[in-house]
Image (cartoon, rainbow, N blue to C red; front, side, top):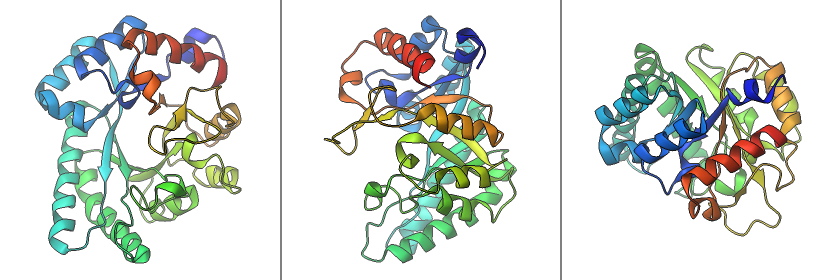
Amino acid sequence: MGSNTEFLKRMSLNQITTEQLNLEEAVQACTKAEVPWISLWRHKIEEIGLKQSKKLVKDAGLQVSSLCRGGMFPAATKTLRKKSLDENRRAVEEAAELGTDVLVLVCGSSSEHDIEACRGWVNEGIEELVPFAASHGVKLGIEPLHPMYAADRSVVVTLGEAMSLAEKYAPDQVGVVVDVFHVWWDSELYQQIERAEGRILGFHVSDWNVPITDTFKARKLMGDGVIDIPRIRAAVEKAGYQGPIEVEIMNEDLWNMAGDEVLATIKDRFVHYV
């Protein structure tokens, strides 16, 4: 792994980990903690506008590892699906403007009774979006989510499913995002990571608490759960990914902490448990 200092150069703050902070506060916390990367969330950008968001990040010298999120393609009517696609195009434009080439796709839920139809709409949505994203130099990173989120967030629940979607396109157009919280349980995980060689666009870390008490804010700090994060990281790196590693933790305790304390805590856990 090399020195801790060198390894920390790969750490990225996924902004949802500091949901209590606005973008300016998150940028300041990263700068103070010498965290070189940040993954931006669109609702935080919307609070102050794209132009000011870009300036804050640029002036701080931070690099943007990804933009979260695009996707949410399934909808009951063509009108709603078109509206979703238009919103995805705006997300692509934002990613390009902010200087990241990765738009993370949380593909969308089975809000209707027909989960197969929803999977079809995800496929159609990505197909529609690829040429627009490519024209802006932005890659689409399909992030499979844990099956417990199929009804409200994503019908793409395994890395294998994500790869079957991604492989329809060139590696510089569509890839996958490996989030340990969502994929650690999969008996085919390591063969699917190997399959994903050259297509891994992001790697997210947190931990799985026992028992799960809140499906959205369920994630724990690395080292507080059951996930073998180093083994997954080694597999991802063997498959060619050497980019930033995002710490993405939705957790009420972290959201109640001061930003500087959050950054200090996740840096320590990153070094010892990632």
